[in-house]
Picture 1 (cartoon, rainbow, N blue to C red):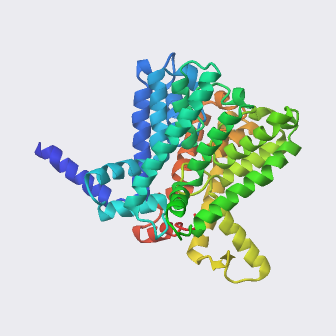
Picture 2: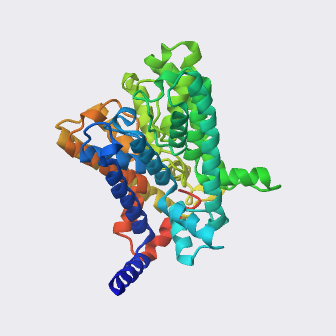
Picture 3: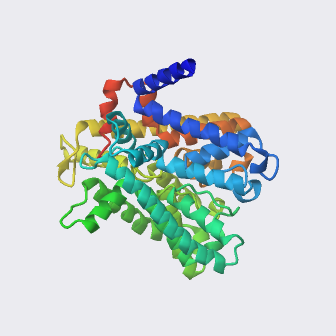
Length: 446
């Protein structure tokens, strides 16, 4: 007993000395290990599934990506599907969120060290209290997913889907977590003209992709008289709405496949593809491989930009791109200090934005290079696959099933890097503890 106690004391001391970024990465790695062990059980799958394919599926679930080399609906049993659901649920919320929520249920407040870890994970504005925020995150998640499942159940049952309740729950959680996993082999193509399903999935994806900061901020705006939303939330809502309003008619006009759809489905399909790429959700109502080159280019850009900070989506984040845009505009205007809505953007936040974009692009290019080596060729489909993996999107032109074992391992690495973020990975391997204050500078920017 004493030896076990000493080991436990040493492990706790080691974790206390680790940087938050290291703990975050190890937490997701532990989920992956446990997930692979669960999916490798004989009653978790319906046929022979290799260890690499299980690793691919688990990493895709934990990173809320949605790429799959094995059909989720046909290749895994109910136990396997439930395991996948739990993985993208905890992957979206983060293991630190769940463990901290358990601590809050037992105590009135979090230890100081735990509060710093959570602040680093969520990059919260200073006016947010971490303990209150965590409780709101859990409550909002459960309420939104439950409402979404109820609406989807009605629609799936009317469509004659077997086990409509399970399909409703699975797709609701997957949508809110922007995971993109579907029990259907063609994602949501069968519901392309179903307004209720499209709108419900879109609302769930936007709730997850906008980020928990925006959800909490919007709730305070509604429930507190005179409360003013933070500039971060207002900026995120503006960018999200602008992308949807501007790109929906563009997709309708330039894509030949969407243009040939019936008028009642055309605009709905275009808006859904803009939504699914912008929130990094990964669902699709039209075959991605049949879209035009220009449409695929715009979707790739949306996947790189990604969703918003402190949410379930991936990408380089909308606020990072906004900061870079503001810096370019200020340079053209001859301004020494970039401004956004009349407020100066601190230099350290610009450093974070430039570093985030640089590391993201470098990681993407390295991933494409490695996939090209293992596949023997670099095609548009493989380029798209890599961008989708790093952005934790899950959209594919159909190349996922054709990946070699080496390419699968590269894509697994991209999905993992996309979940923790290239900048976070850089802090974990390079930065000293004193420099972690720079990571916190993402609070109102990234």
